[in-house]
Length: 276
Image (cartoon, rainbow, N blue to C red; front, side, top):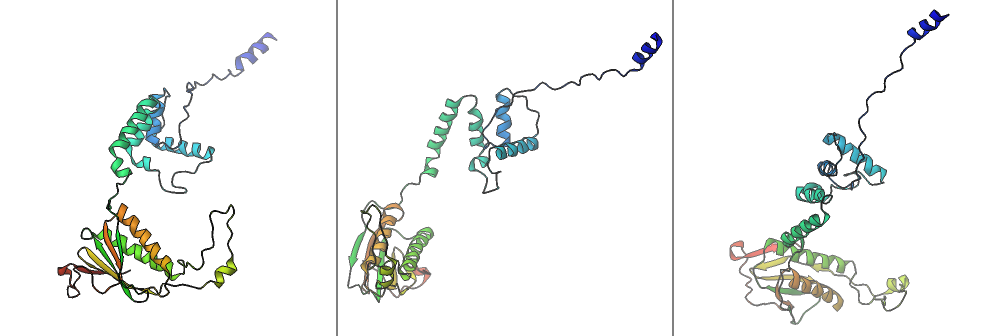
């Protein structure tokens, strides 16, 4: 019987040896918006052993985004701006070592690039002069005098303003006969029947913008005499004058204006025409 027992023991398979496992390293939770290269740097600085490649780290980032209910980069929109800016990524990486230093670096960056972040006003500090000279709503010129000759971007700004003004007016959006809303009321109301029965208004036609050096003019046929339409244009031009492009004077009506010369109609003479 003893040989039988010993034989069974000798033929029994040895228990498997435990396979060596890598020492678990606690993972560091990072903001999901960091670039994969930034996340690798931050985890190494936090003392985590990282063996993942950039591709593996990127896939891990996607999983973390999905766990938090956030869209993958590019799923609902374009990549974040800081993903294209290595300096931002470097500052975010420093945040885990020294938050105050990272904040200081960010403030210094904003100071250096303030001119790109906050656009300075390029208009005129002087108020725009407005003159009416026998203005006919159905057949008149509106004249403009600028402080300097217009650059291409200035021409585009003026044309866009006039075009928008004409579209809103043509759709009847500048109707002073239908101004119902009183913002002093707690709950303003609007009567659609009253709006339908109001006298309609329409901006009939507008010509091209003509330019001679620092002067410009545009012919208009507004039709019905509604001063609200002119107020809307003047409000827009007032903002343009103060913030973007200095306008010395705007004159409504008249067939002549300053040094405008109808015979100067070539580009060599500084004349140009722009579609509204």
